[in-house]
Image (cartoon, one colour):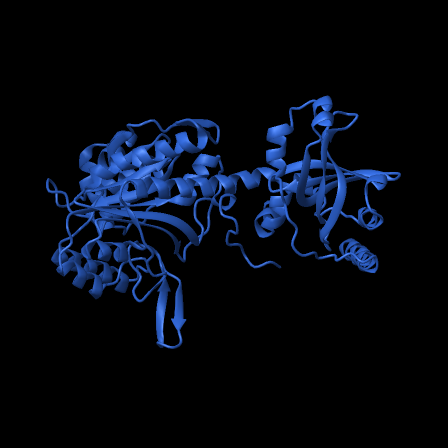
Length: 493
């Protein structure tokens, strides 16, 4: 019998002993009156004498994460969320049944205790337990060295163990929740309506990405998991909602990396009568105010460098950034032969038959993006990669669009929306031709969306912000898997 099975069998025997003693090993309701963290905050600085005088009662519950026995007494440490508090278990203070429970305790078990606060001889803030209730028996032991669990495979695959072993992980996900709540409050305060749109689409759209495919039996049709809610949110603008947003789950059938997970959380919002310049200001205000609210500052540490989130942030055009970073002659960007030569000189991987646009874009991704550490709005993207954005009045080959980069990665994407249904049809058809040629990420022609546009959409600006990447920034995490509770992994062997 291997060690895990042996320990499990020993714990099952203890479970039987509890039952024989009349103790339910998987208890029912327990009224928790106090939280460990709040007790520490309110009373943790009080002296031994003050605690003895005040005799502060408390009732808490948690998981046993440390256990020391000696004679007819012992200490256990209960983990309550991300906080821990020591409890003192003494035979003379407990009923016979309760003391039987203490003899059957293992690391990982859940108990509830009622007692008074005091300080031990070593001055440790502790609960002197007078009543003990057994709540749940753990049949599996915590992993070896669980209190310093660092194996990423175990941490991601068994997030429940990660949360037990690493209290700081609790803080990351508590911060995640506060950020999302802060975003929601920020937008609602400014007159936005929160909406919900479908997660299964008859036609994938709103982004250039390969979708996941599913099948609806009753309708007898294939459907696609949402890659973006954009086209549905713009239908609502057509319908007369002037400001809408959705905090949504998107699904893209693409690679996994430190900044990509097949399902991820996105904020998308749309504003009637606005353009992308308005969204630049709104984005600066949203992110910087969130930093002040959540972190108490706008200059933050991220992976060894300081990021300044204080507005205003840099604005830099797409083509100008390529020219300045690589010290190129502007003519290179309009001549395929020169662009190919420049790309190879810069060690940018390109194919000899790539189009001019693909070569230039590869140069941007390889040489410009990694240098965008401080918040930067890259503006004026080519129309080839902006099928839903409005053309620039001053140059129809470009669009009224920006992408926000922080710490070398894209955080947000926004543009003045294309509301010309004839132009939109032409671009959809161009994308469909690319799809026929083998580009699985190109758009299909969405006839219903075109019909909506033909009813008239006012001038509108829209934006998507990657929530997971924003949370990575705010919590100083290098991988998206550290801010997603259950990231996608290969099947367990």
